[in-house]
Length: 472
Ligand code: ADP
Ligand code: LRH
Image (cartoon, rainbow, N blue to C red; front, side, top):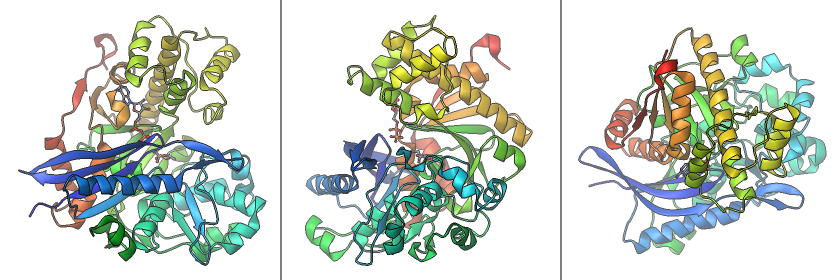
């Protein structure tokens, strides 16, 4: 009997429920439901609308029923680092505050008063980003310690949704590592680190691996939906699921291209050497205890914000077309500058940067978009060089996955600036990786090697060859 799995994949800009199943040895997908995700201001904090997102998950499941589909399992992945805290009655004590909220400003430096930066990296292998969970929790400790005192449960966003689906409280491994509170070697919550920061370690739950069958739906939800299914843990960190879908790992660097650009390679061990620390690379936990050695780059968030600033007048495809027409425009910005993390107005911030660095100001929408894409490509080039330096080898190809791989202009720019062949696809890499983990848990797919081979056969990738003159 064919097994049907639903991936709930919620990125920072949109969420979707995608049904996946095997047919004649190929993985087939059917989109069930898609919805917007965005940050809103609640009581002076930038937050996610967690309850609304959970309602969208249920809306998708209702649609499924209306379509006559009875899934065998569901798995949830979302963006990383964010969380909710529950009290002794399992009621949320906090909003699902977004990592873009400035509450973490200055917290990283304060954490370094308790633990040296180098030691923190050696123990966790996680890159330093001011919004990591560790700094978010530290900011709560500094500004509202009573909340931490009352907290009985720490659940990351997918853990929280899993709790709402099943009543079970666990922390999934891949997402847990993004907190910078998990020891990269023991793969457990780092109790010593939590103690040194004075963060109550009792609120953390047992860490469970991807492919764990968590439970069936709660009785209440079965009553509401009219059917039951298994809730399975995929790599609940979206990037962890996405990288499962990269079929070729050996000779290829991946860029998971969405709201963020995550550029790196898969490894069997964490690399916590000084150079990796200096270049600020991370070692996020992956499926089967593999590690994603990668770097976060500000990503297509910038064009999302640009588009919003133009009141959504242009689609992403139109912005790409306009950027193509602005061929002669050459200014670039440092996309990783914190000023682009949550500016009042992205277009104004890009222009300010160009002004500060004595470059031409982008005026027309095409110039603004061209500046974003050129700037991303330029920083990818630097990251590729850093990876090659650390690995002391040249990689032949770059595999771009995720929504951003539909940007043909950016794909070509990446090929041109790096001199490497670029393979673009699959677009829904995250949902595919999520489904693959569920099908492995259900015994439909043997292991990750087989999963990757199925994915390679099932989804087309588009090849971009670098412009001849800079081919290396
Ligand atoms: P996330 O899951 O991180 O929210 P996605 O993987 O869904 O992000 O990718 C969203 C991005 O994909 C958008 O910001 C946009 O830049 C890009 N994108 C989507 N559709 C297109 C398109 N038709 N042409 C070019 N780019 C696109
Ligand atoms: C991408 C992502 C990335 C994290 C960021 C917070 O969606 O999960 O891997 O660093 O969001």
